[in-house]
Image (cartoon, one colour):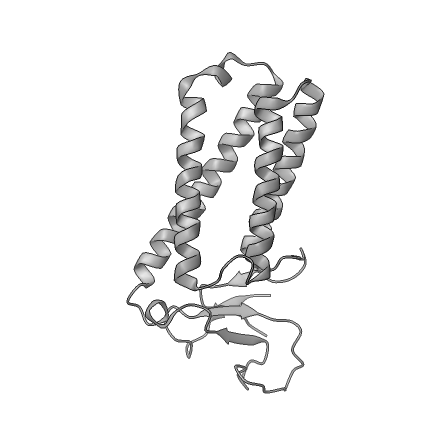
Length: 193
């Protein structure tokens, strides 16, 4: 399936690919030309019309970069924990992950206020917050509080799986993401038939 730009979409509006709509049905928000694409107005008007779109996308890039950096640092710290590396005791290894995670949390809170979707109101954000708490708990056991290396290793693997779930939920905007469906197409792309 190839993706192309939809010329009639408004600048900054989010598109989500939906494979559940019957072909030929026209409901509110559906286009007669492409019934599988639904134009979502899930961001505030000032973001949709370009006043804050630059800020939104900059903040989103900061958030995604912090996610990648946080996950990478956690992975490296877990490997160092497994091989008993003295690098795990260095000061920067104890400080930098907290700084990155603070940036990650602040950008996440800012993004939820911009797109006006909140935890405990929207299921996918609730799933992310609950999974984040589980990830923090498993990460603490893995890096600091594991009594034996086997316990720490299992907690590290569990934390990595939870991290993958959080990323998948964020990518799909669905608390029960499926691997075989199309991703969230916030870039204005749609499948060509």
